[in-house]
Image 1: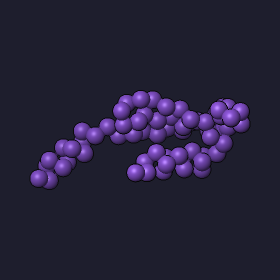
Image 2: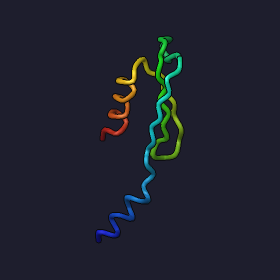
Image 3: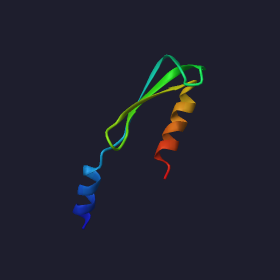
Image 4: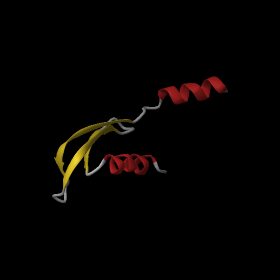
Length: 66
């Protein structure tokens, strides 16, 4: 049973988050300084502009929340 659980965890696609400090523009026109790149569980790539690293990390919590 333990081997089956480990196999299921190994097969799950893991989300990966990368951050890059660069100037960007949010959809509402605000200027940002941090871009977060990630791939969701379905394999789709996303990039999001944030005004701070704290807010970018806050989005990770929102994405992974049930």
